[in-house]
Every structure is written in structure tokens, then in C-alpha cells.
Length: 412
Image (cartoon, rainbow, N blue to C red; front, side):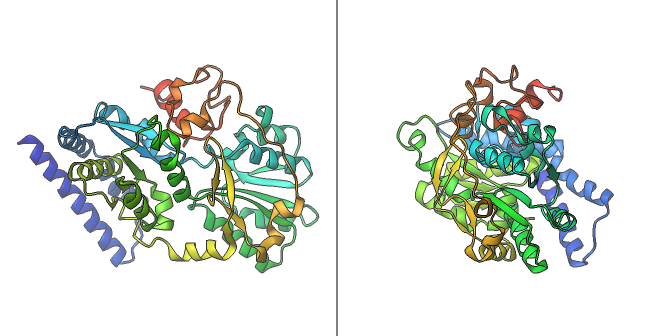
């Protein structure tokens, strides 16, 4: 009886929250900071979390192959799952596999080496913060290049490079762009703005990758299909990416591979609601794409962002991912119409292939073959302050999350 009341309380609180949001949008009012915090408390409510955990366990009891193996394909999801202890709350019921959803983690060493060579050639090299710390060959990073006096700059917004280029008309400015579909529209806007303003000393190295191709690659990999080394029963779909591409691209994976997909937000209640949806699909064998992040995601996605990306970029025939190898049509390149802003064509710097540091198992972690704690370097010579591999660099990396919330200063 107590559980039923708790479950009703869950529905009651959520209904109030969504009603409040609809009224706010209808009246075109902006939430004050205090209102925002109050509104989102529902997604972190301990009572709701407890109710969802109990419901998941109760409904998963009848599943024959527990624990259910669920791959999350977003670094932010990995962080929440580990930070909030969701994997521990659902131990023996749900096993989380952390996929290649961290853009910094999947950036191959050769691309880092390319950025370093560009910086050493005398350009002003601009990029996002975490990229500076990703090790290239011989563990040399852009941060090391900056320490040696090369002009490497950390940006919060890629459009900042417009001002930098205007203030340094006699210097070449290169933006080293990375990320999944979430950040790609920003880079497209940068190139369009630079062309509109007639800026000639700005160019972009495009490392943007696409999610569906990587998911398909994982599901078709020998580890999953042939050898059974990696068991994947379902996916938690990436929330940020899905705001751009919508839910439609995931329908293929449900139809072709018979795997449930639940699009999730980034709070504990979001993650648990998605897991509950997956468990119910597995029970009924009614597999589909379930949108559990409806406050931000719809079926079609952000059409304007998609049009921007399509205008400036096109698919590469192949691209190397760290840990996954070369994946066909899994990344973007700048279209011929905008090739004046393509730094790879402008500078034509070639780099040699390289190998991961000895003992580093980032590749196996990204493919779901190993856990961060399986690595002999983990927490010893490899820490967030001294990363040996890319998975320890960003807060979205599995190794970084495990270290900080299970073994580091935030561990409890």
C-alpha cells in the first residue's frame, strides 16, 4: 500500500510540474533563477527516486536474463549515473555499459597531433577547454604546446573566434571543432558568419561526428553480434543530441536490431524513468523508441539546426574514432562551397598514425568491453590531473566519472 501511494505521489508531482511549465510557456514568461531551481527539484526528489527504483526492481523481477544490460550513449548520462549512484541502486537488476558518447574521448590521437602541428606552425589555435588536455602522441597535448609558448586559446563559444580573427588580421586563426550533433550547428553558424563578414584569416578543422553511425557500428561489431563479448539489451538515447536530430533516427535500430531505445534527460528521475520504460518494453517485447525527455525533444528535432548543418557540411566517406577504429560515413566535412574556411585544405598538414599509451584500455572502455576499474593505470598513474588516456580527461569520460565519484575527492 505504501508503494502505491508513493507511485501516485510521483505522478502527482510530475503532473504539477508539467502543468506549471505549460502555463509558463503559454504566458511567455521567463522563469526567475529561484523558480528554475524550484521547478527542477522534482527531477531530483528523493521520494520519486525511491519510488522509481522500487518499481523498476518489481517489474524487472520477471525478466529471465537479469541484469538487463543497458548502454548509455552520452557522457552526461554516464556522469549522472555514476555521480548519483544509480548503477548501485539498481545493482543486480540493471548493468550499465558506458558507450562512446563523450566527444573528447572518441577524438583520435592523430587529430590531436594535427591540432598540435597547426599550433606549432604559428596560427592562433582555438578550441573548447577539455580538448587542450587530450593526450596526443607521446602524451603531448595542446596544453603542453601552450606551455611552450604557442598561441593556444580556450573558448567557451566558437563564435569568439570571429573577434579574435578581427583583432589579429595578420595572423591565421583556426578553430578546432569537435562534438556530436549538439555542437555542429554552432560551427556551421561560425563559418556562415565568417563568410558574411568577409573574414579571410579564419578556418576550421572539422572533427564533428554523428551518433547513429556509431550506434550502428557498435551493434554490428563482432563483439556484439558474433562473439557475445558485449551484451546490449537496450539503449538510453542521448538527450542533447536528440534535441537536434529528434527521435526518428533511432527507429532503424529498433526495427533492425530489436533493441529498445529510451531518450532521456539528465536528472536522476529522467534516467530512472527511461530505465523503467526499457524494462517495460523488454517485458512486453514491444520494442520502440520511447521519448522520456519530452520537455526538450520531439520526433523531428530542430529543423533550423539541421538545415544549418546540411548547408555547411556533408558526410565524410570515413573517419577514425578512438577505440572504434574507422567508421564509414560517421563524421562531417566542410562542403566545397565553404572550402576557403577548411583548415585541412588550407594548411594540408599530414600526421602519422599513432598508438595508445602502453597499458591504456580507453578503446576497450569505449566499446563496452571493459570497465574503467579494469585498467591497471586507473587511479595510479592515470588521474584527471595526469590523464594517460582520453577517457580520464573530460567529466563526461567514464574513467573520469569513476575516479571522481567512486575513488576521488567526491567519493562517499
